[in-house]
Amino acid sequence: MACSTKANSSNYWAFDTTSISSFSQTLNKVAFGHNKEDPEMAMLKIALLIDEITGEPLYYKVLDGSIADVTLLRNLFAVLSKLDAEQINLVLDRGFCSENNFQMMFRNNIGFAAGLKSDLKIAQQALQEFVPQLTLALPQQHCPEIDCYCATKKIEWYSSSRTFGKEYSPFYIHVYYDLQRETSEKTHMTALVESFRSRLEKGNVPNYLVFKEFFKLKPSAKKQDPVAEKYQFDVNSWVKFTKSCGFFVLGSNEISSAPQALNIYQQKDVVEKAFNNYKDKCGGRRMRCQETSLDGKVFIIYLSLCLRLILQRRLEQAKKNPLDTPRIIDELNSIVLFRHDVEGKVRHYWQEWPKRYRELLEELGVETPAPLVL
Image (tube, rainbow, N blue to C red; front, side, top):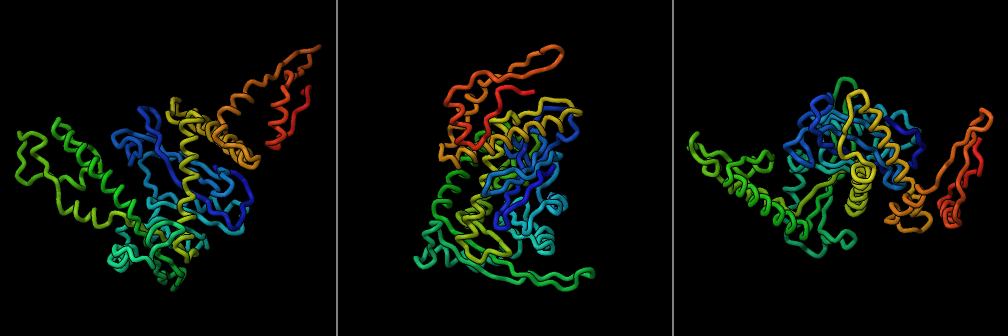
């Protein structure tokens, strides 16, 4: 579902999905997929499109839990064509990365800043070219604005088809090397591998893609062997992982500056914060409902998310701390509207408002309602 809006042509919209874990056996959209919270649980997905500048939600959709992110953009483009925007710019993470999606964005004149998977051919070529020099950590390749080492390569994206003929489009590949990220990734993965070892010793085989990457079933493993002895740590996979630590790649058809591309890409955390609000503040972490009421419940939660994000934006404009949002919502919830039936006619009366409530609403740009509502 889309929210009608006229967007600023310079804004970038962040698009992403989140998983909602569920034990339901009756909701048709609950299915097993790549659950970001618990890989061993079934889920459904919620997709959100958020304006990075205003924080305004523009679009949402409830998805089957088994649908891969990479397949979602075609339907999104159909929705975006209905929005009143001169130029559409998207920020996408690596889950949406595919040659087909990039080609669709080129043909639809959609600007993008996207994370690139390391196994994509153009990303591999850029990494092979820049990794040796970036690992030297030369001062001239360090960018103080983003506190990491970076390099950019411009290529011509080429495609040919009967319908469109030969097409050439500029594509900027930005490669980044972050020393702190390298250390963090190695530390995190080491702890994860140790947790896998611990689970194997207890007779449990983890159902994680990362486990399958670093632990291989021994060719000589027998059925009666203990679980821990059936698997061996793959040193070659670990060496390959450590060589890529600290590196990440972004691609854009419009942004030629590596620092600018990273700053725009990092602003996509606005959608991550929106998901956190959706789940924790608006009660959307569990879908306890029947199939017939699922869409209605998601819509109500989405509506409450919109109101919450608008309130946070108003607080920022009023130079108030957005962290005070829960307290302010609690205060406004104390305002009571009374209903009275007078001679067969319904009248609504607001209770007396404290001065601080009126001042707060004025600061937020909300018109104070009349004492009597007909």
